[in-house]
Image (cartoon, rainbow, N blue to C red):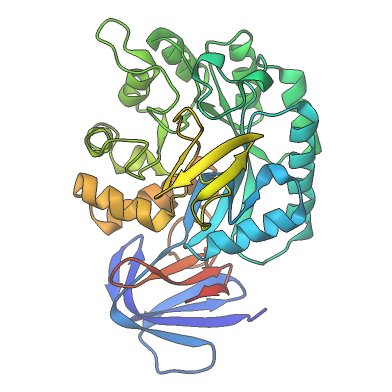
Length: 386
């Protein structure tokens, strides 16, 4: 591993604002200093003035990419995911499971635990597990296998957390399901993020879940009770609460641009998380792919089950950023909150990640003037270069 790295030029997006004519000096995996632009030396990359140097993206909702899926439960699949995510500027992520038989989830979380312990540095870093299912609503299963859904079960969650080596960081659940408040209480006590999703909860049930400790909403609007004038639903509770961060899949398919704009106006840049919810077909040709034992048909950037149900996405984080800027009129600097700072804060790792600050991890993405990825650095190591 190269212990010393310098990135010069471009626009450097720091917590203090956008800096020009500067150099990031990286030593032993962390940002050692931000200084004036330097002349070239070993392990020194100089970028044009119209490039952008940002904190690396943190994606809290990733199932797979490049024909690999977290539920494959193999180290090879996780290698592929980590390497492929780095090529789109994602420097860390939550490996996301889905509703499946208990033994399949066992295998997935155990594999992730072993992988994290192996301390491989092949690309993006796995910060933990997002357990999406099986504690979901059969009425809002989306592309989750409905026959594998279970009622909330603290004993089962405790078992998975033990098998994962305490790597479960976020759990998506439907708060209206029997025993769910008991599960929320356990998750809060264990400092695991409770996320409302795949839910048919009423407005009142959702408000109660937020009061109990839910601080996150999984892909807002998608697979959840929507807004009605006499039953405001989970969506309204999420939009009105200042206690929850909301995931958005901004691919142009999951959400109409006006809905994205509405959410941005109500939640603001401080309470939105851009996620991809990517599945194995991402970075692959159009065709038929597997998602939890179901056939997913991918055509022109859209992933669907045979009945037309949206089934994850093939979205890249840079495309999500471009769409967010287009749909809302926000600036690139605003999107950093949604792709880096907010997820780092949600995971309680903002002291190490999520912004370009001296002594933080050197997790960095360099974008060209068209906002395409030029270089990705994870903990001071160049893991992708165009």
